[in-house]
Length: 538
Image (cartoon, rainbow, N blue to C red; front, side):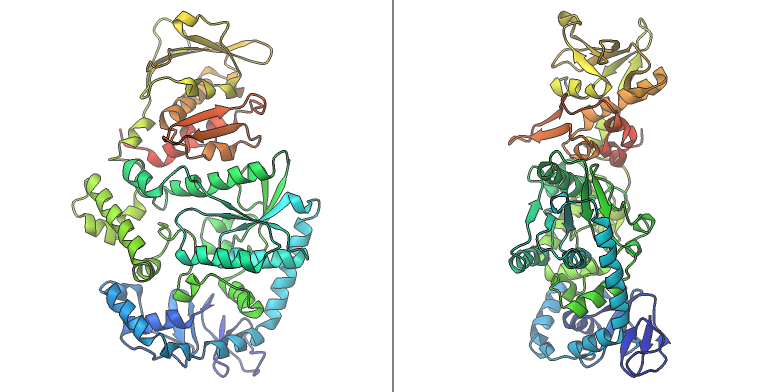
């Protein structure tokens, strides 16, 4: 990005299209700073209204006023008092209504119109190409309430000349208040656009943090599966029932993170089995997204006015320190509740100084489930049978119920007639009746004997491979807490997890839909998604 000293705006081209002057290199990417964020920055620095007439932008973790870097670091906010900041924001609110933001925004749009025309034309062409072969009822826009999905929504409806493209919004239950307000505005402003909301009403985030899995961390974001992917998958399955392919337009961009930099444009989000992802703005920079927003005047989430870089779950461990500062100021009740929960968790797992652990972001970096009772369910207790070859005796951590037998359906078909009912025997056969496995255990007991009768069960080629797959399913049985990850894995929609009012869950594999492909068995390391995040030291 370049800075035009004369026009006081960032430009994509080195030569400013407005004045013709050569610009100076500014940074690799840049976004506008709205008046509310600018005022907050000034108050923190003790200089209210200092930059009101300046052209203020942010890029590469630095703020710039009229092309010059502002001396500011997020570390400067460690000693701020949120109540004082809120008082100052209210004091200057009226005065801050008069500012130069619109002047420079308009000039920015004018100077970068060629870039806007190019990225918009390319994205619309891609959308039309991606939609070939799909009917209107075979596609949808994945809508998060963030700037990227807002832009994609606008692009899709423009490119296809159709306001009636389905939008699915995933309410994670951890949304910013401004996001929920924006979703209401969006629906009101687009009355012809079908808009559905997915939400996991069976689980409570704080309940899981406090009683089960602890808070999520950067490498243990179990909340995404439980409150986002799983809920969206259910919604997709119910809406597109019987469809063999579904096209999802999303707002993924490669420069958002290192992990996303590896995504392909035509696959994108692959956590949900039956859909193909299309990412129209995958190579756009922040500069491009904001250029589109300012050029079109499309309505956006008000959270961006405050200075939030990303708008997803407000307490995500991937959020930066600046987001935490903003939340402490603009949503104190939610912030204090989450902070207190983190402190109590730190005490629970034996941290010597819980407040320091939380303040320094130790919770964000934690790995595994050490110190958590639930994590113990990831440990299997078993021994080979001394009397029968290829047989394992398991000592389970929960009593046997019908859900255990459901987990053996991917290996074949349950046959209760062949076994000795008095001994609790159930056989697993292939579709021709060939014996594959024998299960022996009684409902209510914690002892299970599994005999491997055919090494080809579960598409295996050895008893050792089959042994591992059986342990995957036993792990699922012990750890299942209804996270819905298994539902998302099955491309046939054969798996359903039902949670009743008392919180009891049932895991069901429907024989009429299951093709015994075995994908659900080992899709996650060790069989269960939660095992991956809850691994503990023995």
